[in-house]
Image (cartoon, rainbow, N blue to C red):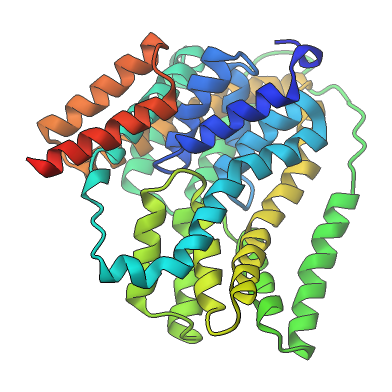
Length: 395
């Protein structure tokens, strides 16, 4: 689709629809992006999505959020990219902020999560769809097949945060070095916009210094969550232990049960996993006014999302230039083969964790068939899965 022909309002509506169906973590989100942004609307290609996944996996911050921001940047530049981030993340942040007030109500009424029992299998269907679509385009030739299988096997058994960027970089280097293409390294002109890095540095250093001289809880929450945002590679699942250690074990802002309840709730809600920061920040800011608690929630969410947004704004235009180099284009084939292996591995792990039960497998197969048919929008699919879970709880 031509960039100039895309209406921003239409694109942002699609982003919002993605946010409503975004269950199951980054890999499932990629399946959702494949279904809506590629198969239905053709904003980008499968290869471009694979590039963005690989790029954001190697950066600190929320991977799926950075990926959809990259799509927004490609479609309409930095302003649309910023609007994309807001439309994508804000609904989940608002919901988690509200839940920081409703925690006791949920506990008192023993709200059950049984209706969410098929969300996991549905997410597997989205993941397999993304893995299939990307893999079909890039996994060809003996080298790419080997890289795909190595990534699949290694990350199935070993999922430390450094493994993902190491495999992606390794896959690209091996592919570029083995290639016998001539004149692989032509020069390109790059003009980085260092203002994003400057803002990043000022916020990181300035917030840290201010917390040392001014003991303000809201400022402390922003600084601490900003730090999580630039130190964490690997997404929401990786950042959770850091938040737990600080807010529960060290500063005792909430109990372990309160923390785990919020984490369980975010698993069953659409949107980025980093929206959990709003719940954690809101719970940490209890005891003051309602405005104070809301401020704590939103400053925590702003802090954790901001580093990843600034980094992708700095890196994305550079990447668009670098990938015109022939050697980078060759390396991309290996990087995309590895990315397909990472996605499929995540689907297999989630399938394993959901349990190899007949009903779970049926939901996975049905999800994939409906996605292939292109006749059921993903938000409707989510509603159907929730309804199925509710009906099963009544039996």
